Length: 526
Ligand code: GDP
Image (cartoon, rainbow, N blue to C red):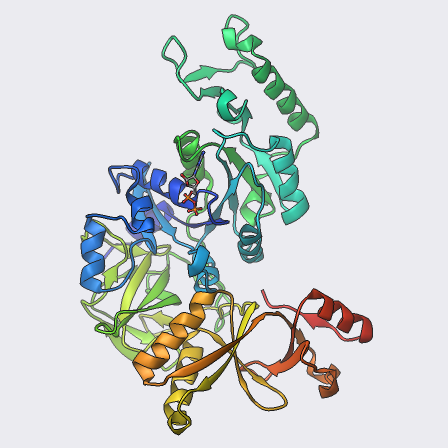
């Protein structure tokens, strides 16, 4: 075990973050570049190939096979510049689910990748909202500079207009697309060239913010245009404010091109310097916060990944460590039940490609094989003093299904499976007021598919699901409720806590309702 000083040093080295983006903005590509810098992979294209299913052979594949479960990119750990980096994957596309949101509860910072030709897109906006609520730093990478994109000033303004966060440009593009010359590094006071110049230089120094007059590039119109922008930013732009950055009220913006690996290392260097090490956690059962350097181990489950392979019924519970040091074989208490359990050798570190036993401390993620002990949001702790982390937030589902048991004779297994899967956090459950029908809610389609599959495989219950489509869920104060307010366009249901909410067919239905009942307060979860 580490002594107090070693633990403190280990925690200070950790940088745990997630990358949020809209599909196709370049998250996979930049992740891969980061892994290259971390020496985790040797060749670009590895992660990419994995994603598209053309993955041939790698260390990860074997782990995956052996575990019979896809853990490949859930947590990626590597060392860079003396820091230990944990990247937590936030699945998008068809894998988008509540787990994607919950993963954001387990990170200390977020990186937002934006396609500079498209600006802020829908999924980025959703994920941003969740990150923003946590008050953690958000770093922005404006990607695809090698293509013609939108005006950089526009992109910065959009951060403020659409997301309500100040942008501070750490560097500034000189040209774009085919005309990309390089990046003006405001902080490092140098020009980073896209292509080496004739003298073989990649970096040109700036003196008082300008290139030497003898430098041929100093007459380039693109460079001069960038200087104008920089002047504008200096005079009228946001002032760099580290306190705001740490609170998620200002985002440092880096421009670059993940595909051509331009500006990525500059970004990474600044990121590891600026991003915070794991901090203290608010607890639900104590007044004082839990310090990451507290000697006793404690952590919380933020995601449970079910195995889709029927031969392996186990699941993996992902635990974010909040304090102390994790040890294989250690005894912990599951706070919810008060039961002690041994985390024996079936415990694995996620995505540790070298598969060595390394120490895990606050900020790190461990994956625990689970046969049904854990629920989302559970705390486990070692030592005598109980620890309970704050509950994970509830999210507002957007997709809904009516669900029934196919075989009415099998109601018992249907109810059991339903109850357990809902408790585990796989889907959200609602009942209609009028008839008590079961309605499932999710943020991503995958959640329904996993639910159906697991009901069949784990509970031997075949379910029938009827989509009721996209709905806007809004909670209502119980004392304002009148059941006559319900109609097919604004279906009244209650959640698992018995709290009433409406599922509005669309925004018109919601507006119509708000007009009709102006005094009724409608609220969303996160
Ligand atoms: P993800 O869905 O966010 O993970 O996006 P990917 O990393 O898979 O990238 C989506 C597409 O954009 C792929 O075809 C990439 O090759 C491409 N792409 C990613 N980064 C860049 C970039 O910097 N420049 C250009 N031109 N294309 C890029």
